[in-house]
Image 1: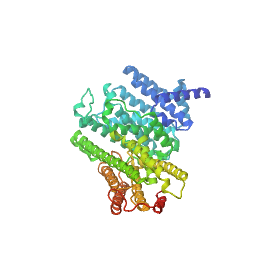
Image 2: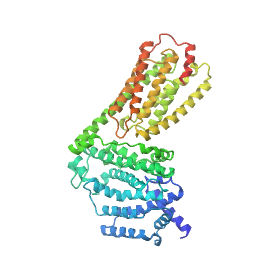
Image 3: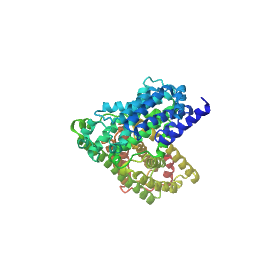
Image 4: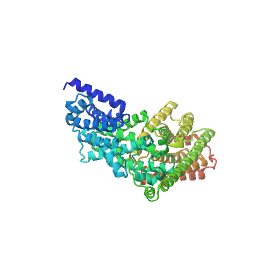
Length: 546
């Protein structure tokens, strides 16, 4: 076949993918051109099959068209359709398992026939046909993997994404008379909504149902993502981006299930781009450690006792955690205000420079790239604004406390420290997300808090006075970290991985905070005034704070 005709066919498939694959195209763009064109051809053919199920034809006509597409696969070269031309060329270049398209058609026929699902085993068969088959097709496009389970793992990952789709479209499908969730789960969690015609309503039972299904989906991601280390870097980035977008969506669904009944949950384009950048930078090989998910006892209780058990437990845990984090925000906000007032009164700055730069970095990341969900979202913005005031004090009073260094050099060192802190904090935050599934920034936040607790002690020692510091500041820091640490240890957010490192961070931070408050009390008055004014020779030691 003419090269120009084949190129035109691939171009058509790429345009179709760009316009129709809203969640997949960001990952597909990361592939080398030959693999990208082949995967676009696969997507285009799968899209045509899927569109038949959702089209306006009657049931018999849909079955005839699906049979035609099944027969078409036996001799793609005989059909001038651009999708067939591109797919035929792709199958000559890559070991694409065309039989997987037949399995996809089997799944779509289940949709056409209006199949319902009594158990999860029934739903699994459907998901394996309509989604697992696409995973197997993708493995055929990617360079050969050394893992003999590559096709199974890819299928598992795509089933997780399909379960996410089912949750995302739960209200829309119910209005159209289609319910994919197993009837056994409906009877367990929402018995009053389990009989046709099904119409979902917001409430504890619905929230528990969605969270249960989300945890189930997450287990498929956990297993499927184990494929990534066996793929080449760009194939892993492609697959990691696709899964990352759906994982971001799944997390939002589990955070607030009731929003499914109000609007369609999507991931903004800029977030999809951010996920693509992260995966291309190397996250795919680390993300396999993200999701160590166990079956919470509350889920087993819900199986036995109905929706109320899991609902009450989830609501209590979430509320307790939010209260702890909110109290942390209050105490730390008070501590920051006291730092500003004390430093202003003493003509100095009240936070070690390195700690200040790390704090600014963590709060900038928490504000703009990883904000906490719900009502806690504005907290990092408030802290960032207050820290900018503390930074202004450091820039104003800092040069005077480093007599051996010119102001220009001090400002340059401050800027360099801030850039280094921002870079390191971003990398650490990304690593904690990868290894511990920490989308709250708790590991990074407590790592910063541990460093700050250490540097506050050094600042007190090097200044040889309590200038810019006070016992109330130290107590507020201690109480703030205690509330956050207790909430994290006792009521961790769903999905975050517990570890001895977590316990060490909390214990180390609280221990150093308590030591700092004790030393301040012993060496200064509770209001923060030193027994003796800080002298110039003593302030010359302040260089060690950097």
